[in-house]
Image (tube, rainbow, N blue to C red):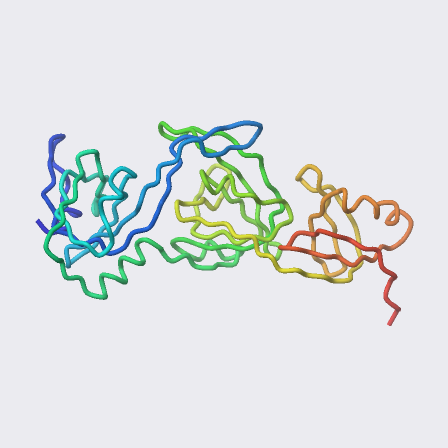
Length: 301
């Protein structure tokens, strides 16, 4: 049976055994999976990790992705053709997913010819596109998104149960040009090292609706990158208020920008603001205010 037929045919009965497939491994990538987490003091770290691989296979007419467990991954290699047997087919509707099991086996076999079109499709399956989207426009784009902005709120890491797993979850609020969105970071994305005020780029997130409003959810493909651009400017601080995030203050600048700053950085200027106008040289690293220096006001024009 062709691979396409397997993907489109619903398994019949609990004892269904899918046919052997003659396929070629087009691409492979390491996809470690944390199967147990260790939680303590509002944080989490991996306790047990399986070194799985995701591979894309083809019978020369269509492609499919399958995750190969650690015990099996060392027995296959990219570019080799195999007879694959002992897998299972799961899912609620076609195209169904191929699942490796303890019975799955790969037998080296004669070559399967694959054209460049299928190779390009294989690349898109392993590394799906994620469209860089302004925060204000996330409702206008379908599929996976990439967003950028400054972290204005950041929760502690919490422990949640999904299915049979206990996994870490963290929420952050991202702001870009006064538009804000909440991100729900799951599993590995939840334990990335980020701070309030930092400018970040978050890839491969998807929009979802809940009782808490529209949110962006991380996926297995999500990566978080700190955008490290050093910036320096001389501005007037028009006002200050407490940030929703403990230990931080929010400054309103003469540029009409609102920035979040650690209270220890702002504290020396609190008394000055109570007496007179305050002008500062403001230094950012990765979008985060790291230093404030008092400067003389510019001459009146």
